[in-house]
Amino acid sequence: MNTVFQFPHIQIKQEIIWKLFNSLPLGISIATDKSCTVICHNLLAANFLRIGLFYHNSLTSYKAEVLCNGCKLESQEMPIQRAVRNNEIIVNEELEFIWNDGISKTARLNAFPLYDENGEINGAITIYEDITANKKKTKRKSYLVNLEKNSFGMAAVIKAILQSINVGVAVLDHNLKFIMVNDYFAINIHNMAINDIMGHTLQDIFSKKYDPLIVNELLQIHLNTLQTGNPFSVTRWHKRLTDDRYFNWQISQVTDTVDNFAGILMIINDVTEHIQFSSLTRNHSVKFKRGRRDIWEIIENMPDGCYFLDNEWRFSYVNKVAMTYAEDYKSLRQKEDLIGKYVWDILPKTPVFYESMVKAKSTRTPMHIEFFSQLSQYWMSMSIYPQSGGGLAVYFRNIDEQKKIQEKMARLDRLSLVGEMAASISHEIRNPMTTVRGYLQLLESKQQFHDYREKFALMIEELDRANQIISEFLSLANNKLVQRKPVNLVEILKAILPLIECDAHLIGQKVKIELQEIPLAMLDVKEIRQLILNLVRNAFEAMYPGGTLTIQIFSKRNRIVLAVQDEGKGIPEEVKAKIGTPFYTTKENGTGLGLAICYSIAKRHDALIEFTTSKEGTIFYVYFKACES
Image (cartoon, rainbow, N blue to C red; front, top):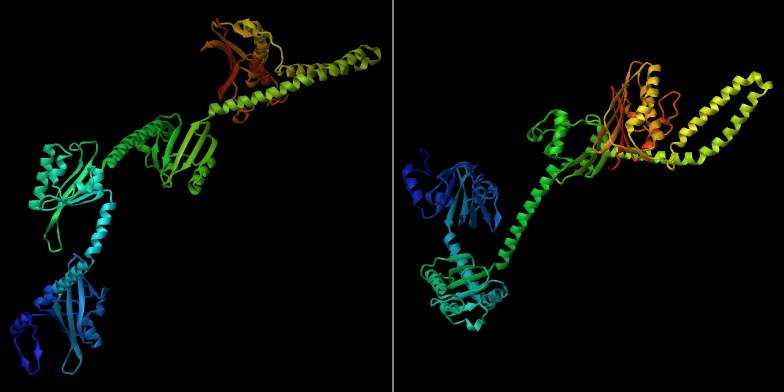
């Protein structure tokens, strides 16, 4: 250490000055430059400030908070800084220092600037007087004075509070006699009057309520607290009581304001309802968890697909059914392979699906859509529900069968309407046509119209063709009488097979027959012949020359099945829904009544028509009910 203190006309060695500096009964800090960046402290100042003797910063980054009259001081407001910067002399200013670890000290400070030989300020001195102890004594004395002044009022307030709380409170003296009890302790816990407890010993009172062994145990506990000052507590004390109640007990020693023994404090809290409620809550919690688990098991095993997406469009849950779709799309075998994946990396952004998902997420509105899945090639119903965290819950199912049923119902409705029209107008059309045909035959036979016979024949032929269409139209009528009787479908087919084979030979096609033994069915022979011929002719028209028509009859699940298969190009997707609609045809000269008649005949026989189609051809199935044995 090379620093020395300069005095006018005298230069004293540092060691002597340093000893003198540290022997002073007050804390002193000296700033040796105008910027206060180098400050020297004696031992008392350093100990008070809890820093080293040299601290190269004028409290600007000090680890203590400095308060003056309760207000925090900034670094430039510190006395040593004010003395240097403002040429200010500070006298008896009290500052409180509070450190981060909770320690606080109070000092009375004096500060004044130092001058060089030219009268310029070149530093400052701060003198500390640690008055922390005096402050504490003053505060304590003030507290005791105020406490004494308010003791009577506070006692009344405390007594009122103790009488109003639902906790048993009692105080015993050094002889373990009750000197204070509240109503709850006396009445609610011990079912006694306060006057019957006051002045009696703990043993006298408890002997009336508890077993002698319990009384002795409680007595020893209180004596131990009385002698050692150690507190005692026990929770949910139940087995020691005479009724089915639970209590928390706390026993502790209390002292007065000068730490003299004041008594034994006993606090008893009845926690019976709390324990019963906790038990009920636990039971409900167990039931809730079990119910939650059951719900998740239902979601996991339900026949509908379900998956959850988080706020970033990533899978957070997938059930079994949804996982099968993921296998179809991306060959993902395990749920772990899908969880966390970005949804649009897995599922296609088809317009209806994508737009509905985005709308549900952005507007927080549930969405329900139906769309045809190009990947799966079936109709799908989907419900999208926004979740609280910004994600989505998606439920979906295959509604292909439902759509087919709807289409069948619509077709039957159309057939019913057309049938009603056929029944009401067909006869009205036939009557004038019969009259016209009769006159044409009459004119054709007269000699003067000999040159027009070919034209008459053509008109009669067209009338006959129109009459045939009307006959087919009448076949759509729901109220058409049918004569059903037990018949073997194989026999009906065999009867018209030569006609079918003849038609096939004329157009260069082949017929393949596969027949099994079947039970009888209640059928109208004429109508079933027409149904078979209509299906066969449609199949012939669908094939090129050289194709093979296959007719099968077999039994399946108490149903008799007629299957007619062609080797055509299949039915286009946009045409499927219109199959069986009256007057709908894709043929140039077709009437659109052939399949419509087949559906009407099937309906009158309580039969069902279905078909499958592909690029290799189409198969029509007709399911008849077998006769009951």
